[in-house]
Length: 85
Image (tube, rainbow, N blue to C red; front, side, top):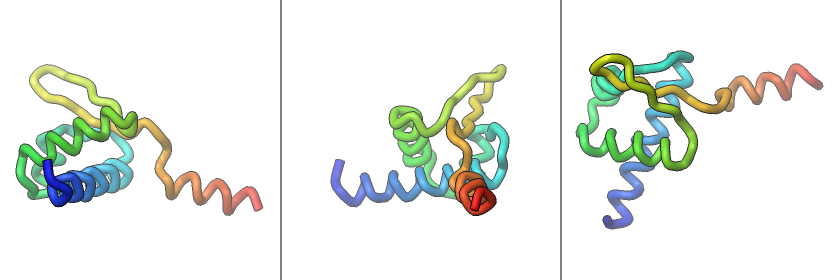
């Protein structure tokens, strides 16, 4: 896998994390694919990378898989820091 492919997967992984932060709830892989309009295989690789790196959880409900963030969003952490001052 070339550096360009790794970069592309990383960019898609970042977009997935942003989408999860925006939604604030579990999101189906189908919904992620519709929102991002990126190649299915690259989205699957990005989700796999996020799972492997422990950024997201994935659960199955019936025939669908749902992804959700493991950590509170960076914006919430930032707000907490600002409010503590």
